[in-house]
Length: 177
Image (cartoon, rainbow, N blue to C red; front, side, top):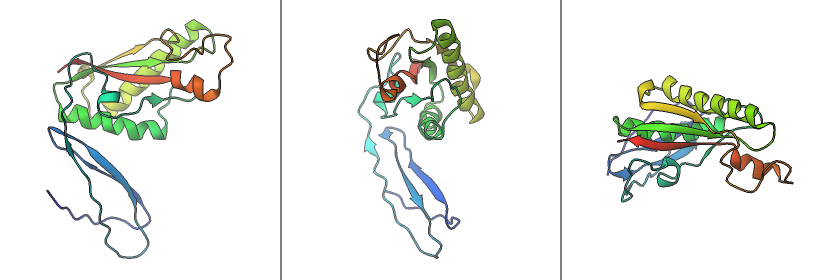
């Protein structure tokens, strides 16, 4: 059990994250008001009983949603940057861990273009992690284009935008501990 006091600016949103070796991290967002008041929040860090080994995808193990991209884009969206902060926390917690970033597209567009787009997405994700302090030698980036769809939205199939978006994703596979 620990308690912390922070002085913060008014009318701002903050992300408060609790991290401890051997525990599953927890985080909460809080928006400060315009008046001078105290806010209390409780972060619960549960004992981590899941084994993380080489080949494990960090997303399901650490409850990190898949990083999504907009159609035909490879820039890091705001919602993706929030999730990438979780990946950063894990990489900082395990300084010898190396990961492979696997990026994928939906099936719209031609296969060659989608392969290039997925490579750009993987590199963009990797660059975000590097820009936030992760050593480049701990990361590899691979783009798979439309070759590994997670649903049946192949070329010519009538799928919703939400179904296509499920295929526009990045994954984080542990390659070294």
